Length: 178
Image (cartoon, rainbow, N blue to C red; front, side, top):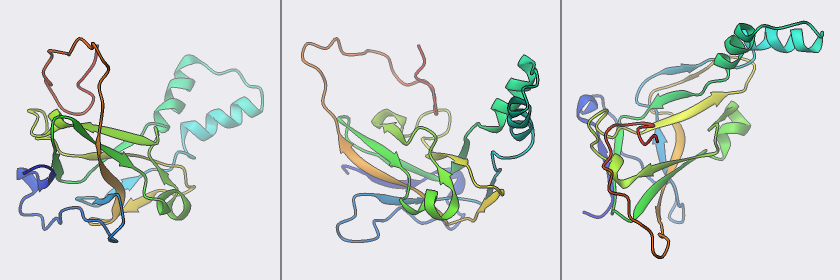
């Protein structure tokens, strides 16, 4: 088996479907939410209050900024899916083209990278999560099975004379810290 998708063991009985391409020339496999998930709008609470205070030249404390900053954090929407691939490949996670236009949902960094060694990691079995921010004015509830992103298999190249890393993955999402 070269590359593909599986359902994580904790969600085997949840009626999830494996990602599929929607047309014969599509590059991306659509990823869907494994459960209902509400993404709060960034335009409320402390963030909006902070913008108002800045607009009106009011002094803000570090705590005010930190509270406002929390409202801008992305949320990890679970898919219940894991992906396997060859060691010299990765999966590129990308927005669905309609998500920003129709639902006001975006990946905060534009793309995500899933390395081959993320598969079956000890922290979360390699479950894919799609990082999303809701920049719409209202909270948005993603329904189970709603397509939220796409996964594209990609090869990668390494530099000549590279000193190959010897470290092994020790966890799940965001585990490769220095």
